[in-house]
Length: 255
Image 1 (cartoon, one colour):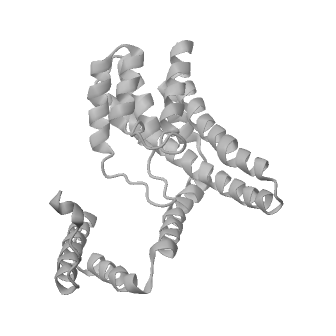
Image 2 (image 1 turned 180 degrees about the vertical axis):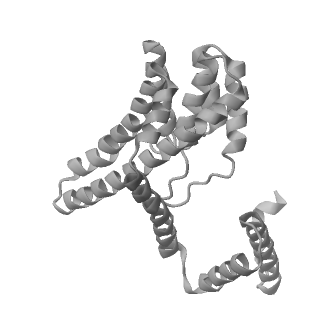
Image 3 (image 1 turned 90 degrees about the horizontal axis):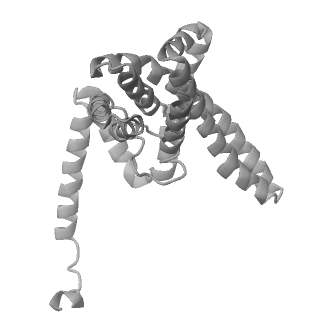
């Protein structure tokens, strides 16, 4: 069990670093990570079954800005391991995945709070010309903290049993849960503010208010508003091309 716990912890570290250090290869998706767990534990079929169920469960979870949604990556690793090691079905895995995803969400909020302070420390090092220290904060310290955030819970859950995770979630004080809940609501607004600060211009203000009014008063879902925006963008591009000056012909078209 010790070797299995270490291997699964390393799988978790690899998956969490996918979009943070290794690019975005989609290894942190529940279907992919559950398949890796099934491959490591010798039951690829069960890994695919549980992964497909967890993937459907997490399709609506989108990480926007600094938001921290329920962590289905950590939940997928522990829930799939639980299903394989205890010979349980996918429904039982979904049950254990819910408290684990909540625990991962709380750890993610705490980690973002710590990393934001490290970012200010890196800014000070850059102002002082200490670029090596700033580089270590971004590359080594942040990576190491994210690795520990995943390896320790996964290792403990697999080695000591998934009941430990449930007991940890239940033992979290209410004041800490409330504080993390407030932080989880502030961080998405902060993330949107950063995006708007970069993208919002005088030409885009009208579209911002148009989208806000449609969302607030039309009763459409986010998917419906996005589809409506795509149609408006397509129509505007077509009208703009017809109203603009004819472009010079591309000499490569005749080749």
